[in-house]
Each structure stands twice: as structure tokens, then as C-alpha cells.
Length: 65
Image (tube, rainbow, N blue to C red; front, top):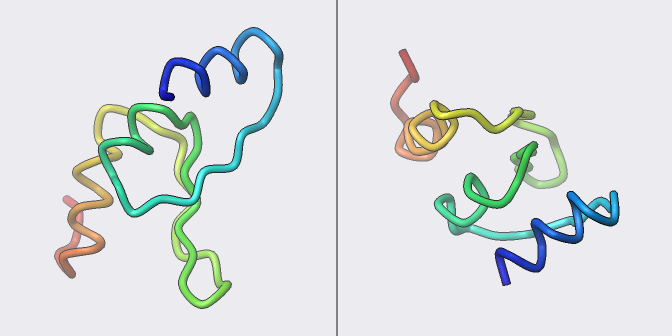
């Protein structure tokens, strides 16, 4: 499924919306991650090597350094 999603986005130039709680999945597949809480944007990130750690810190209540 990850391969299909990436191919759609890269080769066809389409936007794919993924709703997931699986941080490894979204950081692997997505170029941009938007975190919502009750409809409010909490974080809007371009995916980088640091994104997974930043999201883990956010959801664990720790600050990302």
C-alpha cells in the first residue's frame, strides 16, 4: 500500500489524504504531516529525518529539542 500511495503522488501528481495514528507509516509515506486536535491544526510539518522524533515528543508530552 505504501508503494501505491507514493507512486500515485509522485507519478500522477495527485494529493493523497491519509488519516492514521501510525507515526512510522505517515513519516515514511507523507511529504507533509498535519496534526489535528478536535479540528484545530496543532502541527503542520514538512517530513524530514527529525519528524518522527518530533511527533513522538509531542504525543508523549515532552518538548522537542
